[in-house]
Length: 489
Image (cartoon, rainbow, N blue to C red; front, top):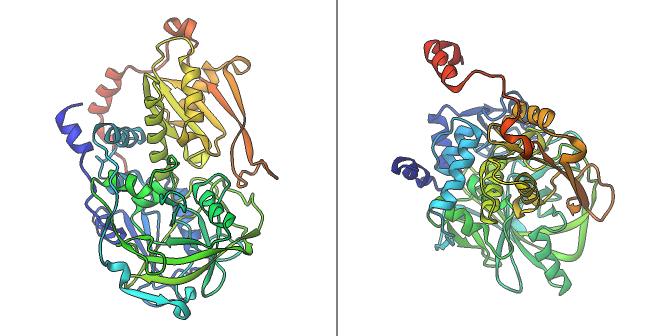
């Protein structure tokens, strides 16, 4: 890697919070402002259709003047859900293709990455306004009603949830859906095995309330890191700070002293009490289905609401893919799978992509340059079982270096011409899944998954039939001769 490439990868984002990014997105021509859309279904339906129409290239949408809510209270959809915006958010070079951003993200982790704990400061913009105790009123904020068959309004979709392990003091940051029940209560759904749920169970086992912070509008980097599968004991604050190259400023919450990003837009502080539940759901989820019925889930009693002047709620729309967060999640998850496989000793990785059609989790492709017999199977098993690839997977496909793992046409072609199904597909049974999996109807929440070797067979790798296509030199020649044909908007 040359010095210029290294300096670009080691650059860091300059923004502090989401509203800094809005200015940048507007200058980039990557922001659309919508006035007057209703929080009941209209906002989410608009954002969903834009994403479906222009996947990976759709603009961020800022909803303003929302009927029934105070002027200036806004909702933002798809903050980092285009390749261009995601690169800007992460401070990476603008990518020419999907694998470019994955490669740059991974290179940063390898070249120059250090866990960077947050820095506590005495105050921040999040303390512009505070509702305390009886003043708490969640109905003041435009919590979206996302899908037509949902069980209610969800104020937390592109959110982060902060909790502290009662045994070790480890601060965990996850992302879980948050439903508005009343003026001062919300519901939360956490999948089995997720760190937030494990922490909650520790408090409940002691018959103690579980303190929690919910940020409903924040820097997209925090959401992306909270959405990833970190190892137990690793704080997502530290990891996100490492991506920025500088610490996040945090303030202590008034009731429990939990860290709050100082530049967040809207933050709820409360506690879950053992035995106190309410019906939560249903909610259309990231796999594209209503797979989990409404159920009794813990209630969070909200004791404080902190919010900036003219707050911005960040909104994710889990739905039939592509969703308004799958591009960003796919890029980060692909980078982390690639990094974990390399650290496990796998050589020859050329690229990884977690396809948006698989909701960024269910259909993952790893490209390798085969170096020895069994290399493809090793790659597939590692990609399926590493921490970042383990949760709720379905398919892992291994392809050769001539296949772009992000190009679904390339991948299906390789599966169709280089894979002998009885011999080249292996199965992993009873793996970590979720009640959101439409194939599962009852616990234990375990699924089966396939690892597909779609590489040229090792024994005939060097004499496999030649691919019928123009050479690289010829392609470059004709593209340079007739450039207008390839620059159509």
